[in-house]
Length: 124
Image (cartoon, one colour):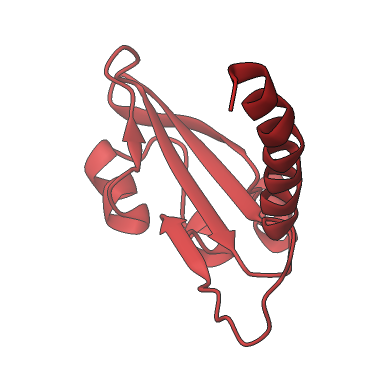
């Protein structure tokens, strides 16, 4: 068989194989168990409510645990990141950024806010 005859034979076969194999990635096989995957720090509303400006690094670490990301270039910023991937649902991502100034808690930002009762208590 010549090369051109081989090319004519394998081109349709190759194209068919690629199309069939790519379709397999979009199929859900019944009975296949998919794991729920959690990564990072679980931060609760109660933990966020315990944070107060002026807390030391060790006090913040006692409340929240070790940060997932401690930026080596920005020593005064700690990142607490949490993701959970539940099969069949959208991935949930939460982030809490802690900012220090002179080794004291200056502020926090991200997906967590103080609860209403704490905001009312600090306003009065």
